[in-house]
Length: 560
Image (cartoon, rainbow, N blue to C red; front, side, top):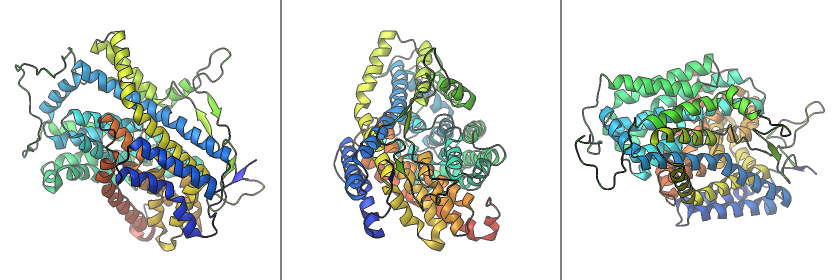
């Protein structure tokens, strides 16, 4: 039996919206304001979502259980799988002394923490987002910043802010290609529209993160680096998205910005080094007792291996080949799919979230298939990179096993938190509570370009994924824009571009950052540190989209 969602279960839009918001309020309230452990806050939020789905929205119990199981599984794989293996690689570099050596090397190239912040969090993070996505750039760059001397809260918050610029295109363009699939719009035109909205904000993000770290004076001291990084990233992002498509946007932009910044540093260095600048160690100095013995080799080697492996892993032909891998008697060995009992094709969305069904085009029930692409998953690529790195790090098999088990023990609470939060997001999605919140923003008339952008922000904050937000609200954006006489490409792309600003406040990303920096339990502090930045940036995106919709000069940039 198929259950149709009801977006106004109480017959009162305001009351239905308030009830739909209860799980989000419980989760974010406990994380940001309460003194409740994050894993417990996630479980309590999941409990609230379970109650709202069954009691308020009258979702069948079997479907709620299925949605919970589906979210839990997705939280552990691929998200938890990425976190576990990134932390394993990090532990290997620390144990081998390579992280200390890397810090020394970066101190020689760029002793200024502001330059390190731009180079690692923005440039390298953008490249990793284009290759892997799904939390990998946050985990990797947050760990690197902390080892470079940034405080854990700083490293977490600044990495989350920096990760906004590339997210709309994400890993090999998945958010945009998924948006095209959901809306039926042309994928190349969607890529072009996003490429006419996001580059402006990619240009300012390097300035923004330095300002968030040290204020205007700190930003003024390294404005050439911020300008070169932002300009190179945004220009390549605009060109590739408008003339090539969404697949390689972030990979190309990240590489271009790294090359541009490194080229600038050959000719220009900031003069006003902050007091926290990394000191260049004396080569003759004796290592401190706490310093790990440095094994010979280039300290960049593990990270170069990681970048190369993730780039290859993310290429569509390679990914597809791994997914199609079959063995005798096992057709889908590389990427088996499992229909989730109780929820797969048991729930259907209804107008106005989707188009009114016709005999020729009926509404399809929502799919819920767990894809165990265990070979092509980004986490597997990170594990392969870590194991390849051991060839130069020199660990024995017994040491590797001990380090991996130790890493698993450390991240267990975080894996529980991520699983509970993804389960909460899935229950909210399949019950229709998320669409109830979205419809409240959609009913804003002439202000829709602004609030439609906020809708994408809300979607990512709820689901933790720009791709999931596009699945959630992409069709609604298209329908509402058409009814109001706006370009559906403008508002569909605004959902993805506005959504990137919600990435820094979604619970999943915050937990990943806290795990990477070793401060699990401090998620509330991280959320408070980034929330106003997230809100300010999405307001700016909303204003820009509104101007595009109304101002003739900017309207020429709108794809129709």
